[in-house]
Length: 151
Image (cartoon, rainbow, N blue to C red; front, top):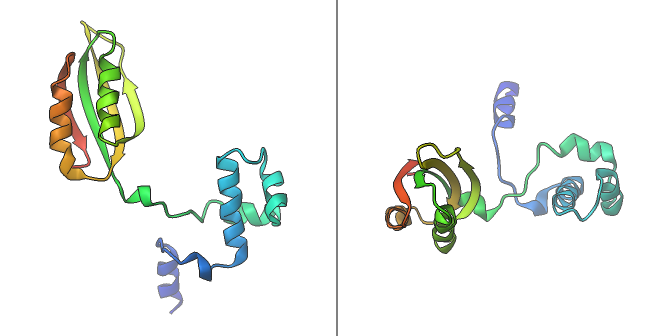
């Protein structure tokens, strides 16, 4: 029985917030306050919600708010772009218009007139990816588009 309980404790669970102890909900509130810069320090945020800093530090790395955006798929594209003004801007505009939530953009230094750009983003609809890649390939200055992950 103890072994079974230990295995369950190592897994993630989603729990309705209404059944959680108040301290857990307050820790989540403090984390939100700090992330949104509503308070300058954990001490001030803890005071504002009425918990001790020790309670906050005890639970902060173990509780998270489930966000709808986490249901979105993460995609990574590698693009070879010509070293011309506005090419990367055009790529980002196409991603914006596809409702992609950008996570990272990494660009190498251009060599021989071209640079490799890796873009990671979240997007709801995986079925959109072929059309998105086609739209990117059609942009002036985009030499190559490869879908690295998320397919």
